[in-house]
Image (cartoon, rainbow, N blue to C red):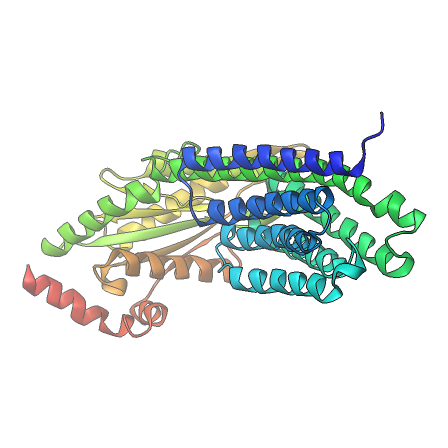
Length: 410
């Protein structure tokens, strides 16, 4: 059975409408945000383009509908690019996409009715290809590329970009009425390709947003399921309270930052599972050795921990940190060709070097851990007053005054 172009265009519109409804329903059920709204707008643009093309094919004299259809197709990938930017934490450039789609409309209108259905289509093909390419590049630059669905979506967008670039080349070199263009880049071929690609893209986007929702729930949970450490949502309020209580009681408090050395090398040389297992092993050691009333926190995706030691002065915190480092060094992680010894860079900060402020304590201890790693790793670096002031800049210069003022106020 042979399907005529009109039937294929109508079918394409139905498929796009179906996946759009599924995406919108999923977004509403999850609680939509800017990413969902932008990607939903991309699917809406695709629907607009499909309906406009069907209207132009079904009703003689509505040649201007092709201009709307062209803009809808180009705006689809351009908004997908904006959605990727928002998803990766960058500012979306929706205005740029709308301006580009306006140029696509203008190209078709300038060509006029006499140019036929393909009048000004070069702008649509170029805009669609560039939008897909920009979205693909944005995905390839994100640290979350290790996710399978992210790689699949990047691949789909790369195929879209290449396909529309190829259509543009054939259009400019052979014209829309040539046999080679009709065979490889005509309405029939493009409709079938679009059905497959738009379905794959929608599936990837839904999966990515579902993964985002799962990660958000984990962040809101009290404990990290892999290491048993408190999440940011659970760690921070308790740590703030503990620091404030020790300030009022004139008691010492220390922060210890523990970062695995060469975590990214483990991920690259072996695999993600082994790298995460190394973090879990470190978590087990820390939980076993941590003093009573201490708080262990871990940010998502971080290969290390922040440990607040209430009532422990700098010397005690250093002793504990050295104990953790030695204990971890004695642990052998099994790999395919033998065993691997884990190394740890540790930074220590206390109220004498960072004051009675949780964020300042964390900043100084993390900077000290980074300095320990820079010195070769597998060592403990205790921040001095001067290093604390350097870490905090203008804030650091008032550490002593802030500490004394807190003591007087209590």
